[in-house]
Amino acid sequence: MDRFLNETSLTVVAATLFVLLVLAREGASWLARRLSGEGHVASESGYVLSGVLGLLALLIAFTFGLALDRYETRYNLLVAEAAALNTADMRVRLLDQPASGRLVELVRAYAEVRLSYGEADAARKPPFAEQSARLRKAIQGETLRAARNVRDRPFAPLVVQGVNDALAVGVEREAAHNAPLPTTVFMVLVVYAVVVAAVLGYTLPAPHHQHRLVSGLLFLLLTLALTLILDLDRARSGSIRIDQGPMQRLVRSLEHAPPPAQRLVAQPH
Image (cartoon, rainbow, N blue to C red; front, side):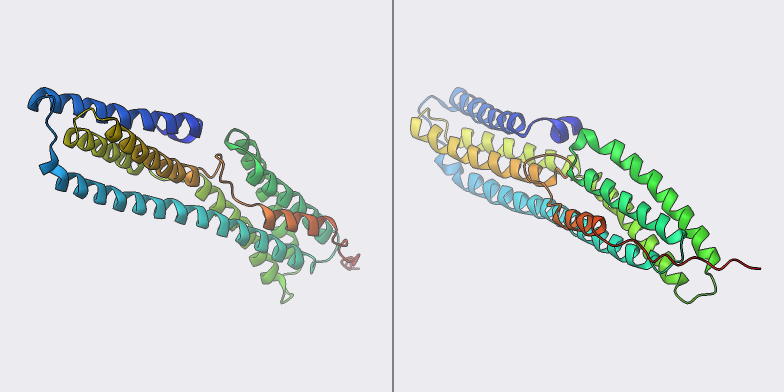
């Protein structure tokens, strides 16, 4: 079920949801006619339908809020990572050559990989995640070696902290991308929508065309709402994608940044 919700085309998911709702309505309508007669309309059960529709609206609003919050969290982490990488680039330039030059190149390469990670589809993200992990290790090792040579300078802790913050945000961002809305939450919402469709079919069992038309429009709106929730939650695919503008601007600024100062470490005599 996780694969179906997270990897199947949204068009297929939406069509499946709509068909389920229609089948639930028709099945309940057929059952009501069998139990109560062909011409019976259970208008006295209208209050039940109003209640379940109200609760369904609350559940949709709650789930939509969760999906939107996760979407905003992923975007905020993207902005935070771009800002942290910019800070790390500025701080590693405080180091002497050749450590400064090596770290500037590593940070630039890492930013480019992070941009590719954000722009990639779900199937293409794992290679960029692995490449990011390798670059993190290289940056960490180079930073530690450079920090040991300048441990007596006041800016040394700032360099280490800046690099560490940038790498930590990247890990947090990947974790957020790999933490979609729990499948159980969405499935409960789908099951409840199917139950609502069945209640609608049972309370209005008469085969009037206007009933089918109105209920069909309701099912279409429910399908659109559920599909929108799923689309928002698909950070790695879907039509609603996270804007990579902050990372794109960072990569362009790093590409046009001047090289670090050619100041060499004085060798002991």
